[in-house]
Length: 354
Image (tube, rainbow, N blue to C red; front, side, top):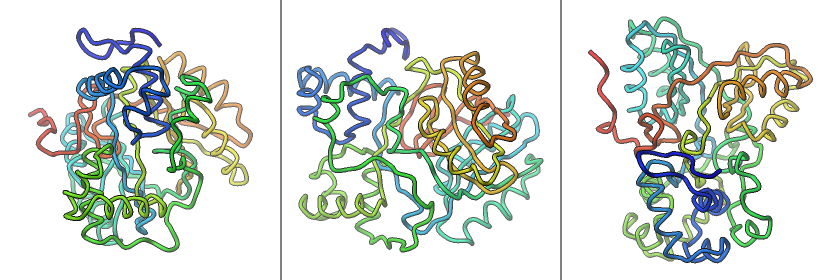
């Protein structure tokens, strides 16, 4: 993957891709340990990492798993009046309970993912606020029932093979990849105010050091380290490497809505999780019982992938391929064009056209 364009005169180089892969394996690895595994100097790794972040190609974030807190998760599709999509997408991106927003279907559809701390919060958005918006023509909401791939767990399989098994073994830390599990934990964790401050600091910078985390939580580095390990063990938080796919040459993104025979839902979900093009896959309620997100280099590759490989999965009854025109927010990170622009600060959102 040589010379992939990021912006202006900056081009992604092979060593940049290797650093991205190293971070997928060990998001909080020190520059020294990454340098040792990659055969680079520590200063080179530091410099390239900071350039990738500055160019909006890469961002390491601590992402809260709402299921560990007992929060339900929903996917929502909105069909909107022409000319209203920008305003609706930006308004959704401002909400703390909406962590992913995309515009698709020739600019007339907004898809988002919500996580509600309680039923009242969910009903406020899905039952009252959105239905009262005149620009929203139709709403479909689907409860997430089982997640097969997503977040920290997949390491984005498209970069598999970038490093040797020996290099990945040198980097692997104590945090394990995501494994298939129920969406909502049976024994939810109750966060303390100190936990909330710790999670806020990690959402701003997933690689924040223990001294910075201690300052953010008004504690000591040792206490911050112990609490972080506990939150990781309970799967309250995971570290995700947010990537701008276009910077690595992936220009065709699509939401896949699959209708699968009930007896094959688990098998299809697990098969999707093994596909390099798939970045997210979950079982959902509603007429489509599996939702997935695919990243391909172009629409021809997307066509070949969905027709030849997804279309051949046993139990598949029908599939809708909905291309994503642009992301507004992903995992709490705002997106401008094809670049990441940082944490979800509403002041960074562009104004809707008049």
